[in-house]
Length: 257
Image 1: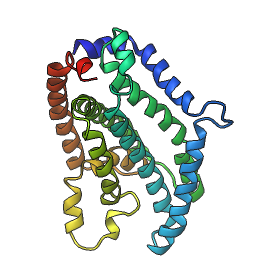
Image 2: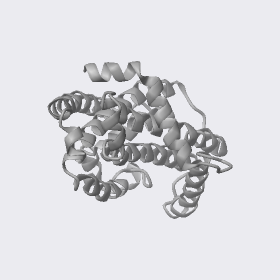
Image 3: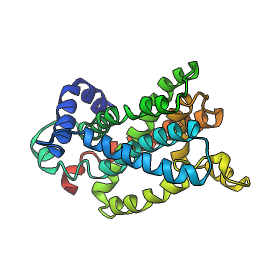
Image 4: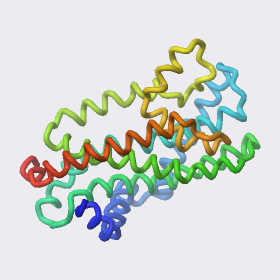
């Protein structure tokens, strides 16, 4: 806990590291990080034209639904995959600079929040295209997004430590995440799936609940009690496990590198 508190005091360092990571990727490009936003927008438009038409889903529902879901899922999976390499890719800095290891996890989270800030401009564009209004339920976005961040961060911390010790874990995670892309209602909507089996499976899909915390309020709905409870319990148990693993392993990470 002391490491986490100290990391917040060094948030300027976290910001500089995260911003430099993003700048290095798009160095000397004209649009910078907005290249990612542009490619995401083109991909979403292509999916809407193909799947939205074939599934006969009203555009006023499908375009915002897909846009929010795809952007949030990208953020979630980027944090997970990059957290697996958070300590490994910063090995030289960890050996030389005496800062809490949690800095490198928060660096990954912050970098992806900056990317999310660029991609989120697509959401109001999608709402304007289909002339869909936003109601007061959108205020639930604030607690939902905070709970989303809590869960994303403990997952990143846990995977960062375990991946440093077990180097096969990053490849395992990278191979599993594409499966969840199709199992999670991003390209499809739960209402369009016949039968109750798919809906029952969604109750145990953590990606579905995490995305629902952010997407449901913006779509004019309130996340279900099941989603709040699922994500709340996940945050409590997850942080307990992540802090236990981190406390037992943080002095060994440098030797694993």
